[in-house]
Image 1 (cartoon, rainbow, N blue to C red):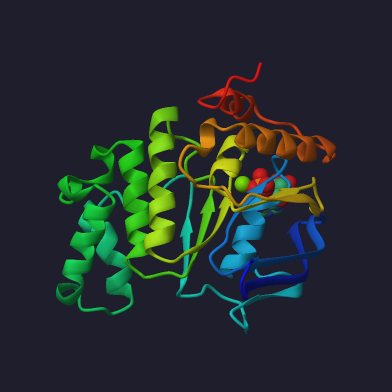
Image 2 (spheres, protein in one colour):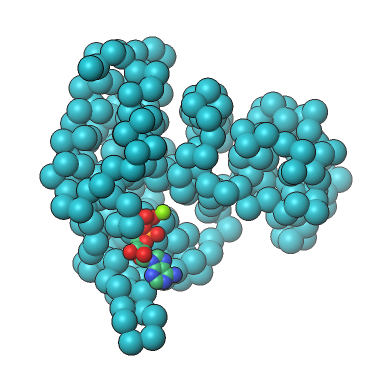
Length: 273
Ligand code: ADP
Ligand code: MG
């Protein structure tokens, strides 16, 4: 059961215009995401995944159609939407704690009152020891944990993630994937995760949506109720799901899996020569 619909993208159109040329990324695109889902979005490079997240975040409103979240049209960034980018977006001149406090300060929150929540979050994300350090003194995994803490302190109900783990090494990526599973549960988040890794989509997405090349449409979707369950990564069903996703990507014209994605698909999973 998908539960009540929280996000609805209805007949959306989106065009980038540069001088006299224009690129139609979406033309009559519709999507619904239910409360508590982790929707994994995968599709050819340049098909419009990041643009879709920006539309849902209210950063790039559609030129036609509408984005509605919890019954309200989204035309500008929404307070309860958290956005995590691949490149972390931390401020290098602020410490870890300073970065986490910033959003609270902007919202005019009393920091002293929030300090116990900040400390609990640092603890949950296992970055307490880094709190006085600057981003340049952190590993990639730690930076992504700080980026998560900075968003979670604002108590979002929706987490949009754009290839958040793609620049991390394989082991760090696996620990971040586990961390995300725990966070989704603890913070009751609905998540949309863009990834170029078929394995990551199957591991984390309770539903996997495969997009076509531009103007992007839904090539197909796969229910994946075992996402996040213990031992799933090593199971036969996991392997079958990766094959289903790959088949849908194969049908999608313009699919050009990057070498990185092709490499990841063979990592860590069951032997599938
Ligand atoms: P993805 O995230 O799936 O790789 P994007 O959403 O970033 O794709 O981009 C979709 C298409 O729009 C691509 O062809 C890209 O070149 C183009 N595009 C992205 N951002 C801009 C921009 N700011 N101006 C013009 N074209 C853009
Ligand atoms: Mg992108």
